[in-house]
Image (cartoon, rainbow, N blue to C red; front, side, top):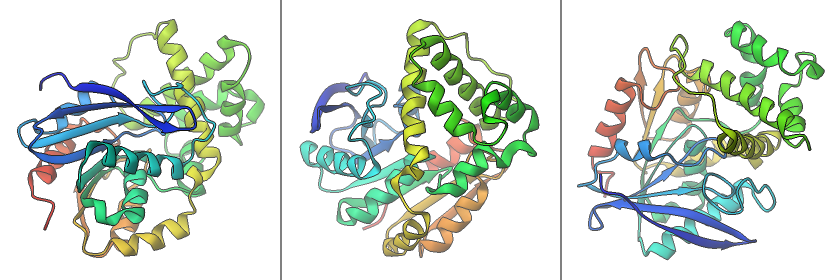
Length: 307
Protein backbone atom coordinates (compact mmCIF):
# COMPACT_ATOMS: atom_id res chain seq x y z
CA UNK A 1 0.00 0.00 0.00
CA UNK A 2 1.40 3.48 -0.88
CA UNK A 3 2.44 5.73 1.97
CA UNK A 4 -0.52 7.71 3.32
CA UNK A 5 -1.09 11.44 3.10
CA UNK A 6 -0.92 12.97 6.58
CA UNK A 7 -2.17 16.17 8.17
CA UNK A 8 -3.15 17.63 11.54
CA UNK A 9 -6.79 18.67 11.99
CA UNK A 10 -7.61 21.24 14.71
CA UNK A 11 -10.77 20.18 16.56
CA UNK A 12 -10.90 22.76 19.33
CA UNK A 13 -9.77 22.93 22.96
CA UNK A 14 -6.17 23.01 21.72
CA UNK A 15 -6.41 19.49 20.28
CA UNK A 16 -5.16 18.54 16.81
CA UNK A 17 -5.81 15.10 15.32
CA UNK A 18 -3.13 13.26 13.37
CA UNK A 19 -4.95 11.99 10.24
CA UNK A 20 -3.76 9.65 7.50
CA UNK A 21 -5.61 8.98 4.24
CA UNK A 22 -4.59 6.18 1.88
CA UNK A 23 -5.88 3.84 -0.78
CA UNK A 24 -8.18 4.77 -3.64
CA UNK A 25 -9.56 8.35 -3.43
CA UNK A 26 -12.46 7.22 -5.64
CA UNK A 27 -13.07 4.08 -3.57
CA UNK A 28 -15.45 3.35 -0.73
CA UNK A 29 -14.76 5.69 2.22
CA UNK A 30 -13.83 3.67 5.30
CA UNK A 31 -12.71 5.10 8.64
CA UNK A 32 -10.58 3.14 11.11
CA UNK A 33 -11.08 3.65 14.85
CA UNK A 34 -8.21 2.38 16.97
CA UNK A 35 -8.55 0.77 20.37
CA UNK A 36 -7.26 1.59 23.80
CA UNK A 37 -8.56 4.16 24.52
CA UNK A 38 -5.28 5.91 23.75
CA UNK A 39 -3.49 3.35 21.60
CA UNK A 40 -3.24 5.27 18.34
CA UNK A 41 -3.07 3.75 14.85
CA UNK A 42 -0.20 1.58 13.66
CA UNK A 43 0.94 1.24 10.03
CA UNK A 44 0.19 -2.49 10.20
CA UNK A 45 -3.53 -1.75 10.52
CA UNK A 46 -3.59 -0.48 6.94
CA UNK A 47 -2.78 -4.00 5.76
CA UNK A 48 -6.28 -5.09 6.82
CA UNK A 49 -7.87 -2.94 4.09
CA UNK A 50 -7.90 -3.14 0.29
CA UNK A 51 -6.08 -0.10 -1.17
CA UNK A 52 -7.75 -0.62 -4.53
CA UNK A 53 -11.26 -0.77 -3.09
CA UNK A 54 -11.10 1.53 -0.06
CA UNK A 55 -10.37 5.17 0.60
CA UNK A 56 -9.06 4.61 4.12
CA UNK A 57 -9.11 7.29 6.79
CA UNK A 58 -7.08 6.45 9.90
CA UNK A 59 -6.54 8.92 12.70
CA UNK A 60 -5.24 9.07 16.25
CA UNK A 61 -7.99 10.05 18.66
CA UNK A 62 -7.68 13.04 20.98
CA UNK A 63 -4.48 12.78 23.03
CA UNK A 64 -3.50 9.44 21.43
CA UNK A 65 -0.56 8.50 19.22
CA UNK A 66 0.69 11.44 17.18
CA UNK A 67 -2.27 13.72 17.92
CA UNK A 68 -1.44 16.86 19.87
CA UNK A 69 -1.07 17.51 22.75
CA UNK A 70 0.06 13.90 23.24
CA UNK A 71 -1.47 12.23 26.27
CA UNK A 72 -3.76 15.17 27.08
CA UNK A 73 -6.77 14.14 29.20
CA UNK A 74 -8.40 17.56 29.52
CA UNK A 75 -11.51 18.08 27.36
CA UNK A 76 -11.15 14.45 26.36
CA UNK A 77 -14.32 12.35 26.68
CA UNK A 78 -16.27 10.02 24.43
CA UNK A 79 -18.57 12.87 23.44
CA UNK A 80 -15.51 14.84 22.29
CA UNK A 81 -14.29 11.88 20.23
CA UNK A 82 -17.68 11.46 18.55
CA UNK A 83 -17.72 15.18 17.68
CA UNK A 84 -14.14 14.96 16.39
CA UNK A 85 -15.05 12.07 14.10
CA UNK A 86 -17.94 14.01 12.62
CA UNK A 87 -15.72 17.09 12.18
CA UNK A 88 -13.21 14.93 10.30
CA UNK A 89 -15.90 13.53 7.99
CA UNK A 90 -17.09 17.01 7.15
CA UNK A 91 -13.54 18.26 6.64
CA UNK A 92 -12.87 15.48 4.12
CA UNK A 93 -16.17 16.07 2.33
CA UNK A 94 -17.28 12.46 2.80
CA UNK A 95 -21.06 12.03 2.53
CA UNK A 96 -21.20 8.59 4.20
CA UNK A 97 -18.53 6.15 5.28
CA UNK A 98 -18.22 2.66 6.62
CA UNK A 99 -17.04 2.82 10.22
CA UNK A 100 -14.68 0.10 11.41
CA UNK A 101 -12.92 -0.57 14.68
CA UNK A 102 -11.86 -3.10 17.24
CA UNK A 103 -12.09 -3.30 21.03
CA UNK A 104 -12.58 0.29 22.27
CA UNK A 105 -12.72 1.35 18.61
CA UNK A 106 -15.86 -0.78 18.23
CA UNK A 107 -17.48 1.02 21.19
CA UNK A 108 -16.66 4.40 19.71
CA UNK A 109 -17.95 3.30 16.30
CA UNK A 110 -21.30 2.36 17.81
CA UNK A 111 -21.52 5.60 19.82
CA UNK A 112 -20.81 7.57 16.64
CA UNK A 113 -23.38 5.62 14.61
CA UNK A 114 -26.04 6.28 17.25
CA UNK A 115 -25.31 10.02 17.09
CA UNK A 116 -24.81 10.31 13.31
CA UNK A 117 -26.57 7.38 11.72
CA UNK A 118 -27.14 9.22 8.45
CA UNK A 119 -23.37 9.53 7.96
CA UNK A 120 -22.77 5.78 8.35
CA UNK A 121 -23.12 3.26 5.52
CA UNK A 122 -22.31 0.28 7.73
CA UNK A 123 -20.22 -1.01 10.64
CA UNK A 124 -17.57 -3.72 10.77
CA UNK A 125 -16.53 -4.31 14.37
CA UNK A 126 -14.05 -6.66 16.00
CA UNK A 127 -13.67 -7.86 19.60
CA UNK A 128 -16.15 -5.30 20.90
CA UNK A 129 -15.66 -3.65 24.27
CA UNK A 130 -18.67 -2.59 26.35
CA UNK A 131 -18.59 0.60 28.45
CA UNK A 132 -19.52 0.82 32.10
CA UNK A 133 -18.10 -1.20 34.99
CA UNK A 134 -18.64 -4.76 33.73
CA UNK A 135 -15.78 -5.13 31.24
CA UNK A 136 -13.46 -3.02 33.39
CA UNK A 137 -14.03 -5.16 36.48
CA UNK A 138 -13.62 -8.29 34.37
CA UNK A 139 -10.26 -7.08 33.06
CA UNK A 140 -8.76 -5.97 36.36
CA UNK A 141 -10.39 -8.42 38.79
CA UNK A 142 -12.44 -11.13 37.08
CA UNK A 143 -9.44 -12.65 35.35
CA UNK A 144 -7.64 -13.46 38.60
CA UNK A 145 -8.91 -17.04 38.36
CA UNK A 146 -8.94 -17.37 34.56
CA UNK A 147 -5.42 -16.01 33.95
CA UNK A 148 -3.80 -16.30 37.40
CA UNK A 149 -0.14 -15.93 36.36
CA UNK A 150 -0.76 -12.73 34.38
CA UNK A 151 -3.04 -11.26 37.04
CA UNK A 152 -0.69 -12.11 39.90
CA UNK A 153 2.22 -10.46 38.07
CA UNK A 154 0.20 -7.26 37.68
CA UNK A 155 -1.02 -7.38 41.27
CA UNK A 156 2.53 -7.92 42.58
CA UNK A 157 3.65 -4.77 40.76
CA UNK A 158 0.97 -2.80 42.68
CA UNK A 159 1.26 -3.93 46.31
CA UNK A 160 -0.56 -0.84 47.58
CA UNK A 161 -3.75 -2.09 45.87
CA UNK A 162 -3.87 -5.22 47.99
CA UNK A 163 -5.13 -7.11 44.96
CA UNK A 164 -8.36 -5.12 44.99
CA UNK A 165 -8.38 -1.86 42.98
CA UNK A 166 -5.61 -2.33 40.45
CA UNK A 167 -6.91 0.32 38.05
CA UNK A 168 -6.81 3.10 40.65
CA UNK A 169 -3.32 2.04 41.71
CA UNK A 170 -2.15 2.12 38.10
CA UNK A 171 -3.74 5.52 37.52
CA UNK A 172 -1.97 6.96 40.57
CA UNK A 173 1.41 5.61 39.50
CA UNK A 174 0.98 6.81 35.93
CA UNK A 175 0.77 10.44 37.11
CA UNK A 176 3.68 10.12 39.55
CA UNK A 177 6.30 12.85 39.40
CA UNK A 178 9.02 10.19 39.24
CA UNK A 179 9.17 8.96 35.62
CA UNK A 180 10.54 5.60 36.75
CA UNK A 181 7.38 4.90 38.77
CA UNK A 182 5.11 5.86 35.88
CA UNK A 183 7.13 3.83 33.38
CA UNK A 184 7.12 0.72 35.59
CA UNK A 185 3.32 0.94 35.88
CA UNK A 186 2.94 1.29 32.10
CA UNK A 187 5.22 -1.69 31.45
CA UNK A 188 3.31 -3.82 33.97
CA UNK A 189 0.01 -2.92 32.27
CA UNK A 190 1.49 -3.68 28.85
CA UNK A 191 2.77 -7.10 29.96
CA UNK A 192 -0.64 -7.96 31.43
CA UNK A 193 -2.45 -6.87 28.28
CA UNK A 194 -0.13 -8.85 26.01
CA UNK A 195 -0.47 -12.00 28.13
CA UNK A 196 -4.26 -11.79 27.88
CA UNK A 197 -4.53 -10.82 24.21
CA UNK A 198 -2.74 -13.90 22.88
CA UNK A 199 -2.49 -16.53 25.66
CA UNK A 200 0.29 -19.04 25.12
CA UNK A 201 1.92 -16.89 22.42
CA UNK A 202 5.46 -15.80 23.38
CA UNK A 203 6.00 -12.07 23.44
CA UNK A 204 8.03 -10.77 20.52
CA UNK A 205 8.30 -7.22 21.83
CA UNK A 206 11.72 -5.82 22.61
CA UNK A 207 12.59 -3.75 25.65
CA UNK A 208 11.16 -0.27 25.01
CA UNK A 209 13.62 2.62 24.79
CA UNK A 210 13.13 5.89 26.67
CA UNK A 211 10.89 7.44 24.01
CA UNK A 212 8.75 4.30 23.79
CA UNK A 213 8.40 4.13 27.57
CA UNK A 214 7.25 7.76 27.66
CA UNK A 215 4.71 7.02 24.92
CA UNK A 216 3.41 4.02 26.89
CA UNK A 217 2.93 6.23 29.95
CA UNK A 218 0.88 8.70 27.89
CA UNK A 219 -1.16 5.88 26.37
CA UNK A 220 -2.04 4.19 29.65
CA UNK A 221 -2.59 7.49 31.47
CA UNK A 222 -5.21 8.31 28.86
CA UNK A 223 -6.66 4.80 29.04
CA UNK A 224 -6.93 5.03 32.84
CA UNK A 225 -8.68 8.39 32.45
CA UNK A 226 -11.35 6.73 30.31
CA UNK A 227 -11.71 3.50 32.26
CA UNK A 228 -12.06 5.23 35.62
CA UNK A 229 -15.01 7.12 34.10
CA UNK A 230 -16.60 3.99 32.60
CA UNK A 231 -15.63 5.49 29.22
CA UNK A 232 -18.13 8.28 29.89
CA UNK A 233 -20.98 5.99 28.81
CA UNK A 234 -23.72 4.16 30.71
CA UNK A 235 -23.84 0.50 29.66
CA UNK A 236 -27.62 0.19 29.97
CA UNK A 237 -28.25 3.32 27.92
CA UNK A 238 -25.59 2.29 25.41
CA UNK A 239 -27.17 -1.10 24.76
CA UNK A 240 -30.64 0.43 24.57
CA UNK A 241 -29.34 2.94 22.02
CA UNK A 242 -28.11 0.09 19.83
CA UNK A 243 -31.74 -0.68 18.99
CA UNK A 244 -31.80 2.47 16.87
CA UNK A 245 -29.24 0.88 14.53
CA UNK A 246 -31.80 -1.62 13.21
CA UNK A 247 -31.49 -1.93 9.44
CA UNK A 248 -27.91 -0.64 9.35
CA UNK A 249 -25.47 -3.29 8.03
CA UNK A 250 -23.54 -4.28 11.17
CA UNK A 251 -20.99 -7.10 11.26
CA UNK A 252 -19.69 -8.21 14.65
CA UNK A 253 -16.58 -10.42 14.66
CA UNK A 254 -15.43 -11.94 17.94
CA UNK A 255 -12.86 -14.51 19.01
CA UNK A 256 -14.30 -17.27 21.18
CA UNK A 257 -11.18 -17.17 23.34
CA UNK A 258 -11.10 -13.41 23.88
CA UNK A 259 -10.07 -12.66 27.46
CA UNK A 260 -9.77 -8.89 27.10
CA UNK A 261 -13.31 -8.35 25.77
CA UNK A 262 -15.44 -11.37 26.73
CA UNK A 263 -17.33 -13.20 23.96
CA UNK A 264 -20.54 -12.34 25.81
CA UNK A 265 -20.05 -8.78 24.52
CA UNK A 266 -20.62 -10.00 20.97
CA UNK A 267 -23.73 -11.89 22.01
CA UNK A 268 -25.19 -8.90 23.86
CA UNK A 269 -24.56 -6.47 21.02
CA UNK A 270 -25.98 -8.92 18.49
CA UNK A 271 -29.13 -9.23 20.62
CA UNK A 272 -29.51 -5.44 20.83
CA UNK A 273 -28.79 -4.58 17.17
CA UNK A 274 -31.65 -5.99 15.07
CA UNK A 275 -30.39 -7.52 11.84
CA UNK A 276 -26.72 -7.55 12.87
CA UNK A 277 -24.48 -10.44 11.86
CA UNK A 278 -22.27 -12.15 14.46
CA UNK A 279 -19.22 -14.11 13.28
CA UNK A 280 -17.34 -16.32 15.74
CA UNK A 281 -13.62 -17.03 15.32
CA UNK A 282 -12.58 -20.30 16.94
CA UNK A 283 -9.14 -20.50 18.54
CA UNK A 284 -8.77 -16.71 18.52
CA UNK A 285 -8.35 -14.33 21.44
CA UNK A 286 -8.05 -10.55 21.18
CA UNK A 287 -5.35 -10.50 18.49
CA UNK A 288 -6.50 -8.50 15.43
CA UNK A 289 -3.81 -10.16 13.31
CA UNK A 290 -4.74 -13.77 14.08
CA UNK A 291 -5.01 -15.35 10.58
CA UNK A 292 -8.65 -16.39 11.02
CA UNK A 293 -9.57 -12.95 12.35
CA UNK A 294 -7.84 -11.24 9.43
CA UNK A 295 -9.65 -13.50 6.96
CA UNK A 296 -13.05 -12.74 8.50
CA UNK A 297 -12.31 -9.02 8.69
CA UNK A 298 -11.27 -8.78 5.04
CA UNK A 299 -14.27 -10.84 3.93
CA UNK A 300 -16.64 -8.50 5.81
CA UNK A 301 -15.05 -5.45 4.20
CA UNK A 302 -15.17 -7.04 0.74
CA UNK A 303 -18.97 -7.19 0.93
CA UNK A 304 -20.87 -4.01 0.02
CA UNK A 305 -22.17 -2.34 3.20
CA UNK A 306 -25.68 -1.96 1.87
CA UNK A 307 -27.79 0.60 0.00
